[in-house]
Image (cartoon, rainbow, N blue to C red; front, side, top):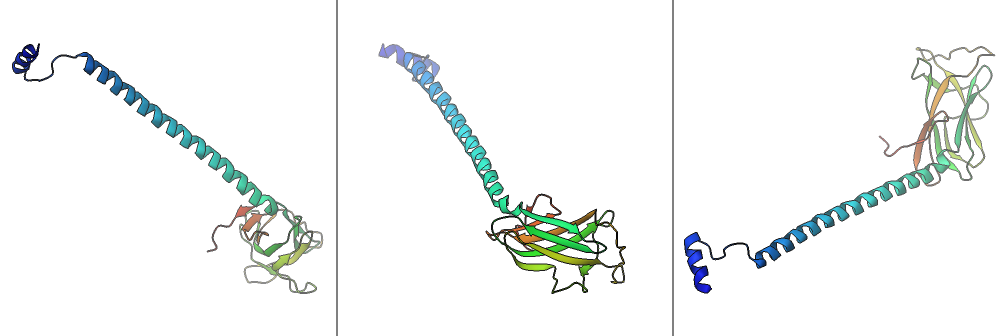
Length: 190
């Protein structure tokens, strides 16, 4: 038998000839290992996908919790003949650094304005602390191109104004909102 193999090896230039049972077993075992490897990769990819979905869900829940207080800060534009902007804290905790940033109306995306000088007390467009359940009123007058106050009629409506304001919640996160729209987080102050 050994002699036949040697002769066959010399004739065909190989030590191992044919596909014996050992080689068949190796081939089947190799194929099994390959299929097992593909299965392992698929299982790892599925686990990563599930982990990613869980991370996104947890992140959305955390963002929702962070917005909880910010959603309770309301803005109202009112007044008779004058414009008063009321920012009310309906939450159970104080908010900080409440500031009126911009006023817009219809086709005018940014109106020039200032705190009305004739208002009583010490009015300001900025409030350091707004306690729970309290309102900060900012009396505003709109300005023309020369910086002079625009006269408004006594019965003139204050509808249509879009006021953007910002504040920091009790956790120290900064937010800004236009009107009573969805608050947006300010991630960096530029």
